[in-house]
Length: 563
Image 1: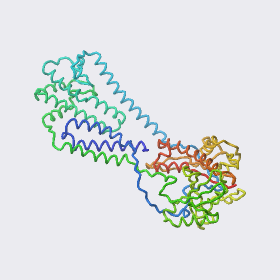
Image 2: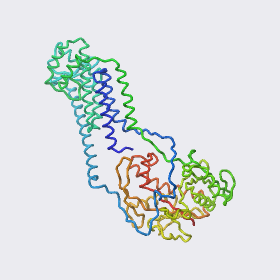
Image 3: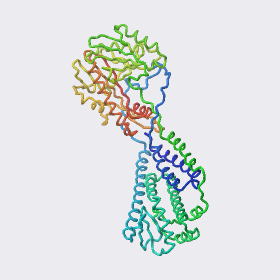
Image 4: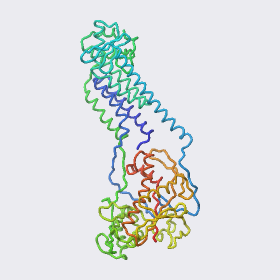
């Protein structure tokens, strides 16, 4: 979703471009009707085109990434013994904290004033109509009242004051009937409404003035086409110079008199009017390409047919199949490595090991597959219980025994006693989720986990990660500056909390998947909340740059410990 500032800039660009096109190629060169329609369309298109979000999905691009283990991971979730300072909630800088509410309040105040002024004028015209003597003239209703200084029309009513007799009355009524017949008032109201919302846009004010000019030119042409003498008509216009009418109405407006007199004699509809109008099509198309089309780079879906995969199936009886062939545990590493060697360097990084197991298969049988995949640097793992199950995708940590000596990658490798060696996680930053043989979930902060239901688990994890009350017994937060796609930055308290999933070897694979989904649901909820506040849409609906922002602010920090 665009930022308000970017949207405003695009509205200014579109409206300025469309009006420049009108001034150069259309005004006084095509019919008045075409000019009117173009100006009204230009106002609406200038507001709508920048608001559109038309996705473009590029063709698949082959990327040759650096080796995964040659550089530190994007999210280093290992904390050393040093204690990181807790960060409070996001607090905007002083000028931004003051400027944003003032700007929004000023904008809304101007909108309400503009709409209120429009409503007052319309109500005033309606009251004047009630006090006037009405005459049904077929195509319009004539409202006569002595207080009307200058004739004008509004919607299907022509307003006329006293002192208009004979041919002068006929000329004035012919002019105003032209406004009624062409529905000029409706066009003026539509433009006024849009201009009230975009009162800061000078091009919309110019468009409204130019539309008023075209209305008067068209009504003047109707009078002359009806056979009235040019000199006589100009004399009638001079008589109206000192009159007054509501500026939302259509009437004999003296501010346009000089241009109107010129148009009465100089305007000639030129050839190729259709071609001139057709030239606006590429202009609108260019604006849509610049302002409406957005390149979308969705995250690769699990099971993407373009992604190289190796499928490992484990039955509840412990039988292992790799790509449909029965194998032993000892053959797993060699066979996965052989499949990986068949691929190019680019496809190796994209390779996915699909681990499919029966729901009642014990987790002990799956550990060997995970270890074999990790040792051959096939880190992307999709866990699923059946072919139709979308499953979950997890990235395995590299094998610490195969890292280069000078590698900057830090991997948390607890021993059987749970000791972290030279690296450890602060106790307050660890949320433990244990799954025993029976499938019961024991969850909570490291100091006091307790039995919880599936319904309670996502909420507990969400509360732990967010730590809205800055509880010293829950996850710390680090205030981090994150770059936004539009060039701005936001400060967000990134949680240091880590979910430690500890699954008993005897627990079923189906139960393991259920708990993994519950953990993911908690992080998805946090991401959706931030996505709605920052971009106005759920995380799944964002484009790739926006998703990266949210993923940096709310990383899914999950470690698994075998029991």
